Amino acid sequence: MPMNRAHRRICGSEEWAGTTEHRILPWALKNVELGDDVLEIGPGYGANLRVLVESVARLTAAEIDADTARLLTERWGGRARVLHADGAELPLPDASFDSVVCFTMLHHVPTAARQDRVFAEAARVLRPGGVFAGSDSLPSLRFWLLHVRDTMNTVDPAGLPARLVAAGFTDVSVDVHPKGGILRFRATRP
Image (cartoon, rainbow, N blue to C red; front, side, top):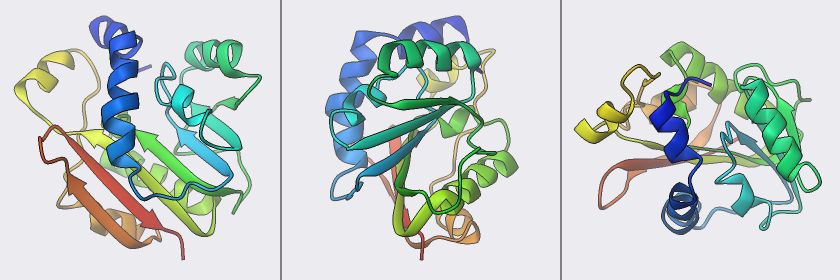
């Protein structure tokens, strides 16, 4: 997993889980209909997964780090299907999900080209009319310090709509949280 020790400790904490449950997910998913079959790309330590598993009928999670995928399977395997898989190369059939989500993980994808592959894969595995939604952090001094010796490739909110359109999406929207710090995006597979 492309995270330093301090970052791993924070992302595995109960405090972070509370932040995702009470701040990030409600804002990122406001007015988003997830449907029954949901894919989460990059669940990390499962802070979002533990909320989603209570909200949707069938949840699949694709985690790039083998050890983390194993831990997620041990904890959530009875309620979610966890795959050890790269979000840029999903081992899933076309048009198999009602929605695809990812939260605060895009900045861990090392290049814009690889992020674009994640977007293209999300479009590929979505059913027509399906939604791709999520959030990511925006750069700040505190954010930069947390990512020392860590992967940090933030997404530019101004450029994100064109990148999602290029991946095959329509009805794209990107917003920055009123208090700053995070962006959210939504897009539809035609």
